[in-house]
Image (tube, rainbow over the protein chains, first blue to last red):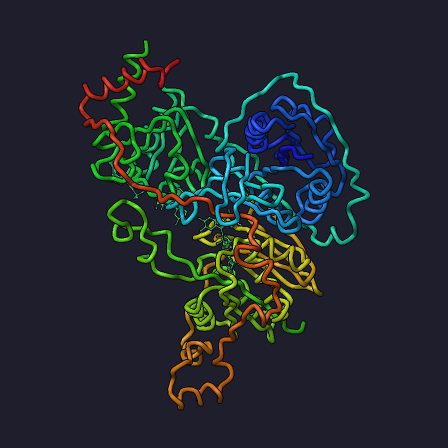
Length: 339
Length: 291
Ligand SMILES: Cc1cc2nc3c(=O)[nH]c(=O)nc-3n(C[C@H](O)[C@H](O)[C@H](O)COP(=O)(O)OP(=O)(O)OC[C@H]3O[C@@H](n4cnc5c(N)ncnc54)[C@H](O)[C@@H]3O)c2cc1C
Ligand SMILES: Cc1cc2nc3c(=O)[nH]c(=O)nc-3n(C[C@H](O)[C@H](O)[C@H](O)COP(=O)(O)OP(=O)(O)OC[C@H]3O[C@@H](n4cnc5c(N)ncnc54)[C@H](O)[C@@H]3O)c2cc1C
């Protein structure tokens, strides 16, 4: 009762990155609230899956293993989560802001009348006073999220209804092993007693999911190119710099749309969110849809011919110049100095 | 197959995609009033899917439903110009301050009143940015939901076959009717206004918009009932005010902070070899590069 719950998703047979990131966040919230962290995972033939969950700090893992849960389907998944939350009464429940989480969480929150905050970029514990009603609340979850196309940041609270539910995108929280041998209790969900024929209404006829190939999120250094790079050939220099300094290549949507690089490398609102140690933005103007995916980088270097490009406002270093000139010089300087 | 009754959910939103210089206030924050009110982009994709069903299955009726202030009737008219048969404006003071749950409750009450086989919504509105209303309406109506739809391929014996666009692939699903579908931006764009429909519906108005009109104009409306955009209030849709507005919204906005595009102090360099050499040295020295 009153614990922190994380809904874990399965991706290619493993616990998804976003879920492990949320477990890490959930663990720190649970420590602050002095309660337990519980995970729930649904799938088929997922014996021993708790081994991918416990090290991130879960004290309990609820597992539902059933043929009907092999692929995500809204109705059976929602029925099981609603049943579990009704019994366990979590104070906080976190979901990935993935195509699964953003389909499932609203359905669950509606059934439980619990409120849901989408796409949070930060979750912290805080107090609240409702002066009008003369009520004080301790230890609420501040759910902080951008809205209005990234032009405002709202802090949302959910004072009276439980669980306080939120979704968070992949790459926003950091994942960290809590304890390799963290002790966790496995609880089996009795699927048969929950699901009914009505849960089978929607059927999957075909499914084509491409394996995850490029994953720039894991990289601590990202050399990202925009429309200003000019061509697919010019991107080769970015790949060379990335290779030399041990990073990955990212891109703006304009570069992806122009066919310079693969969509998997797109950073931003409709791409991935990254938070590397170093982000080098080459020929990227810095529209909000792009910066939404990289502004939390620890250090930003902007290379742009336009001294007043918006990206310069969030950059730590601005190199006013042509990418075609600057990048080879960076490669050369790094080679010379790193020896 | 007999025609279907389709309700398209459409929201009027400020155009947050192009917050240009003129939409910024002197303090670097957004001036919302300067943003034009538009038809939420993904709701246009939703409308197109509905109209394609109507093209394939004659007798299908496409109705726009929007919830918002009086001027949101513009969205209903725009939908009619593009091929919808009519529409409703759900408007009431009691809706003020509604979060997605209260919004979904109000919309679901209206849908029950209107009656329909398929509800088609956009995936996400570009102001609230939550993508929660579609699935929550489905739950409130007790209907199956299919999100991230890209193509409603066909309807066979009371089942809809839908292609969904997921993060790294596609899925083809079947759902029984009635159901709720939410449509992705990757779906085909909406057709443009149609000249005949524009002529026909140019004078479509809500009762509030008709106030103060002259007698002839009102008579024209009386003679042509299709010009009426029906206004629905809380009482009309038999909603319980307890579940609306602030009292019906579990989430509260505690604070809102405008993103200030203030200049942060950046170090400025040129592409000069020596300057770049110094920068790389600095990054190596502070371990941003190397180890
Ligand atoms: C800064 C800010 C942050 C917010 N954060 C949250 C939050 O985290 N959680 C929360 O519950 N509420 C939140 N709200 C409230 C929420 O924006 C409103 O309830 C809003 O009316 C509906 O949500 P949405 O715009 O996100 O729509 P979405 O859920 O993104 O809309 C999806 C689809 O539903 C249909 N639809 C939505 N609204 C209407 C309408 N009025 N009329 C017709 N069709 C419609 C459209 O087809 C639309 O494409 C927030 C509001 C603000 C101002
Ligand atoms: C709903 C929506 C979602 C979106 N999602 C994303 C997203 O996820 N990611 C994303 O990136 N965008 C996204 N966008 C698009 C975004 O608004 C911008 O259009 C895009 O980021 C611009 O890319 P860019 O900076 O590469 O191109 P541009 O804006 O064209 O900028 C090119 C820059 O290169 C500079 N330049 C030109 N030549 C050179 C040179 N030789 N050397 C150095 N600099 C040079 C120019 O000064 C300019 O600043 C989205 C838009 C919408 C509406």
